[in-house]
Image (cartoon, rainbow, N blue to C red; front, side, top):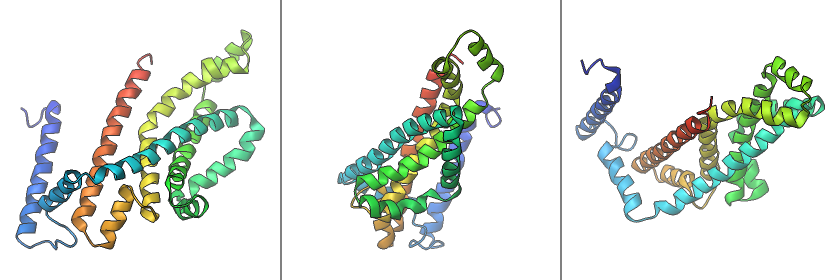
Length: 252
């Protein structure tokens, strides 16, 4: 039966979501919900349509995802380099691992005000926060991945005359590629989170700035619309990252 067939799980999920929206809308129209806190889905949709109809959303989208992309690219690059070096050089690991552990232990979003003081309210502070979130994640992904490489494989390469560069190129990097790509979705989420949080603290544009503006004006419909927009874009990026992961790891 279609109701139990796993292939139609998405149909059941859509039906459940539609039912939830219908109940929410009906409750709102019956004045069972305070529109100041929980506006009707129709009001949220109207706010979302208004954002796109007058074109004011595009500069904010561009600002947020420029910051997120910058932090993502630099965070992945630096995280990979530091992770590889720390995993292969014990003296560097003794210096880097405690620092990264400390950064991983504290809520990194509390660094946002500090980055604003250091780098100003422009793009740089948002990129820096996204960078920190992503770099720490990728560092531990690579560091742990290399440490867990099969030692027998390493010994065989060394026995056959392979040097350290050969180990990095032919053993370590292919081994941690799956780890990095597997955490790519998490890294994307962290990058967007860093950009939005930085904009929420202080900014002149961006989705985080719009959220802060909606909060200050008690515009719950606009807040829900922006949250929905962020969710939709991040899910789209997740889907693209998943396809990229399958393509790059098709040999595995």
